Length: 254
Ligand SMILES: C[S@@+](CC[C@H](N)C(=O)[O-])C[C@H]1O[C@@H](n2cnc3c(N)ncnc32)[C@H](O)[C@@H]1O
Image 1 (cartoon, rainbow, N blue to C red):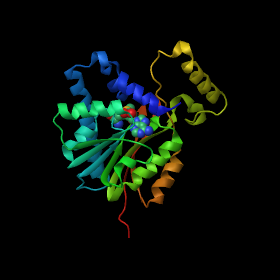
Image 2: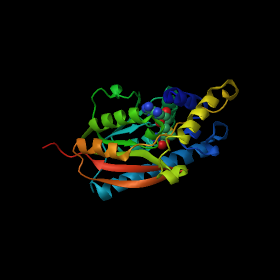
Image 3: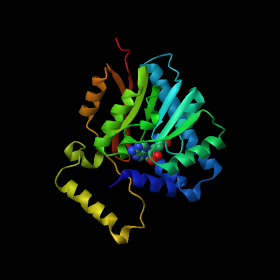
Image 4: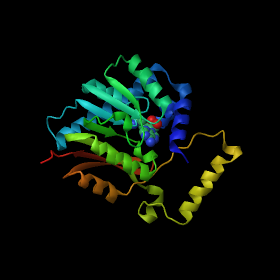
């Protein structure tokens, strides 16, 4: 399954619901009050994240050049732009980016650039940031691609810059297997589900929203490789998809 195609379908069909799975954010229910609630959730998130950065990594931290990877409709990049000099939002879906652009105009936010993403982050053209953030995004990207994107995000972080990245690593439905999808029957079930979705009868259903669990060892390896010496972590649980939200600082090169 090509997750990029599925996300473009979500962006066209129901972009706010696809970001925060709650029926009040379905297209048919979106009013200006509901939209304000949506963005307020983003403002709260960013304010919390920056406070944690100050508490654990740098008491004087205030981002200047910020990147939000997988920005969707702008829920987090717009509040980020309110506190940074400039914020970049990247996303794989043109429709999501279009909606984010509309929201920047609606809220008169002028210091945001919205860029189409790829796994090499080529649209960044070598630009580096003092703050890189990504929330509830990598979970939807197949692990091999996600690892590559994470490596590239680390390379776009300035020395002394702060990264705050969310990953999923286990699912509560597999608790008998320590959260990991069992390879036998679990895999068979996944394949059957995929075949059913592809069949003619199921074509009218929602686009797929793939969930992936990352191997934390591999993530730590990639972090240590660029010299990160320590990190802070928050546990997350989105309907049984268990996650880690990792806060770290890239050290100065010696
Ligand atoms: C659940 S939404 C989260 C949006 C935003 N981070 C937020 O919390 O408001 C996931 C976003 O990731 C984007 N996305 C999915 N795969 C991606 C990829 N390979 N590269 C960049 N963005 C991707 C989707 O298009 C979607 O906008």
